[in-house]
Image 1 (cartoon, one colour):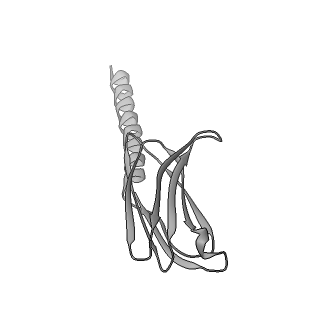
Image 2 (cartoon, rainbow, N blue to C red):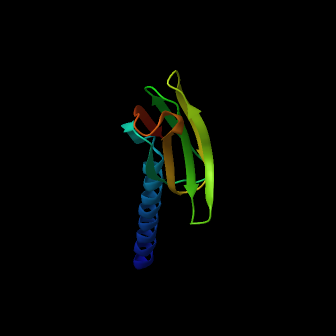
Image 3 (cartoon, helix red, strand yellow):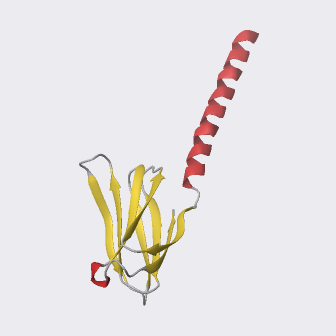
Length: 134
């Protein structure tokens, strides 16, 4: 009788430890954090890459500001070489600081590209500030 009680207690304690570890991992992955906070002198374009853990939906906020010239912001998810899902493709001018809230549904690697328009030429650079939070 005593052995059975100890075995049940051990199973309950192990189940609690495993459940706590799983919930702790999920909480750690979902706490709001800065994924990218970067300033770049942009000659043509720059790509940032980061991984997201998603259960259901997750909100990502992308903020881009440019010092002088128009830039285009593209945010996408690529599951394999053939499956690319574009989430935003927007212009940002030097007169505005654009903020884009995006809801993502899949875990994986996400990419953010900021590209200067070709009309200004390759010799012209612009300073961009990119911040991505989730």
